[in-house]
Amino acid sequence: MNRRKIIEEWIFKTISFLAAYSVVLILLYLLIVVFNKGIGALSWEIVFSLPKGGYYFGGGGGILNAIVGSFYLSLGATVLAVFIGLPAALFINVQLIRLKRTQNTIRFFLDALWGIPSIVYGAFGFAVMLFFGLNASLLAGIITVALLITPILVRAFDEVLKTIPVELQEASYSLGSTRTETALKVLFKQGFAGFITALLLAFGRGIGDAASVLFTAGFTDNIPVTLDEPVATLPLSIFFQLSSPIEAVRQRAYAAAVVLTVIILIISVSARLLSKRYSKNIIK
Amino acid sequence: MNKKRRLTDSLVNIWMRGGLYILLSIPVFIGIGLYWKAAPLLNEHSLTELIFSSKWFPMRGEFGFLPFIFSSVYVTLLAFILSAPLCLFAAIYLTQFGKMRLLNFMLPVIDILAGIPSVVYGVWGILVIVPLVSDKIAPFFGTISSGYSLLAGGIVLAVMCIPYMLNMLIEVFNTIPVGMKEASLSLGATHWEMVKHVIIRKGFPGIISAFGLGIAKAFGETIAVLMVVGNTLNITLSPFKAGYPLPALIANNYGEMMSIPDYDSALMFAALLLFVVILIINLFFRYFIHKTEKI
Image (cartoon, rainbow over all chains, first blue to last red; front, top):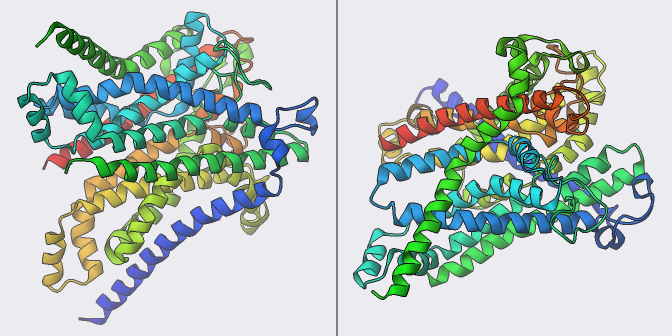
């Protein structure tokens, strides 16, 4: 081997080594900064109480309205997304199982849909709201977020369903079951671990997304009781408080960012653990 | 088969089919909905005027989107230049040079980081990148900057894109058959030569697609950029000046859009523009992947 080759080899190995570790470091650094800044400001009051009078000028209270609001919103959106997405994903993998070309085209469109930014969904949700004469409310927010997370849910679930061997379906048909029974009792059961992962992935996206609910969900200091009331969300609460000139309010935004990050981390880690747990029952 | 089972079967079938149709009609409805709201603006101004004019005076009814489009493109390209080489080399290291254990550890970590909400990246940008730009980078180049700048937006976007692009690149490199790598190594190529001549060449369409999809994601990102980019109208080449990307325009002005005539149409037009551009980029690169996966 000549010298030039050895030097080139060394240079590029070093570059890629540095690149890999700097990526790790940057992302670790991000988490450390956010936690470091926020944990100091975090208190039981912030997590477990509603904003009190003068909250946005540094008064007492917390962000419970936003935490609960985000859960309501994302839960509603996930239920709606499952109602539309679950049958759609099963349909692609049961009824269309012989039509590979159609399957691929549908997947192709869903992938493209995945990439549409949430602000576009937000603007569209606003247009729909005006069309039906709705106000910024929990319901409008739920519909918008559901539109955003349904493609994610379907594609993530579909990734698992498509690995299930066709023979399993054939065995089910040969025992005389209908397509519905095959879909719900065989495919859904077999892909249940993937379904849980997809569900939590979509739920996490729903909690963390800000741009789509900016127009549609409104903002309030209270926890909504009915669907037509406005609702506060955690990302927007962080966003609004951070733009305040008052230091005490900004501190609470940092604390809220920690709360949001922890919620998202818990969801993603439990998605992994649950999917491992449920994959024990799969027929190999 | 008894009646009840048959009835359930046909009902559930309708439900399944309905779900799929609803899902596939979402982009159509988005397109129609946004166009319907943007139509008043499109009737009064020509498309070229809207896109290429830099006169933005909503009160006088002049809507030129050029400054916003310029800022969007600028920030996106900056993010791309900063993150693409890093992701490419990191993906090469993780899949080719590094230990299997490292990759197995990194994959879930990258996945989890990809799920972190953009507002958290924005908080980080305000805490770290904005002071960095105003105190270190701008003085180093002999200028003054508030920190809320195109550069800060580009850096935050670049960091946001890393988990997303890295994930796709690792997937691309993992699909390359081991036999091909082994053949190259057995002919006496060094590891880097193998990467250069086999991995990068074979994975080229995949790499381009991952980059393209990364660009599309960066182009539509809203909250994180909005928080650090400064949000002032500017057409400038200096990265230390503030900018005003399209998504930030939409997000910032929804409050007052009902009070000025045609303003709501203008914002909906901005959303339509984002939707169309990103859908086209996405469809193109997905098609690209789709075609190459088959071969």
